[in-house]
Amino acid sequence: MNELEAEIRYLKEELDRKKEEISDLRKLLGREIDREFAPPVEELSDKELADYLRDTIPLINGFVETKPDIRAITSHRKTLGRPVVFLKRALLKTTFTQLNASLDLQNRFNRDQSRFNRQVAALFRTLHVRDGRRAERLKALEEKVAGYEEDLALLRNKLEGLNAAARLRGGSADEPPR
Image (tube, rainbow, N blue to C red; front, side):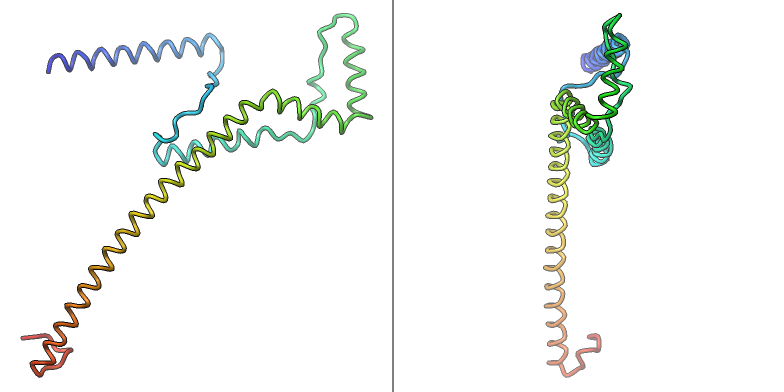
């Protein structure tokens, strides 16, 4: 038993060390780490699945953009930067508003396409897992109901047998036997 406790203590220390390494990475980046892959939803509980769906759907909806942001136009040039930015903003505001809106949206979509695709795939995988779990529960409930129906049929047959036996003895079927 002593070896088991020592192994558990070692594993807890290792886990604490790994958590510190992860927090150090977050501090180094200065933000939350965007994981490449979604968590394995097959291992999540029903509450965790509901929370994951609640958190994922707004992220997908966040990719919908209706207006381009004029403030996002900048230039890295020192001397010609201001006139170029002014010209870009003027063109965007006047003649190319619709074109730039679709181009900005398309560019943003292209940049975020892989992230978006991962989120959609994770969402559908989550929905699939939830659907499978609900189908299993429904099947279990149907089996329970079938068992109750069998019990009810057996009880009905016994009751009919008791009623028939009571009629044969000459008593009323509604009277309890003595």
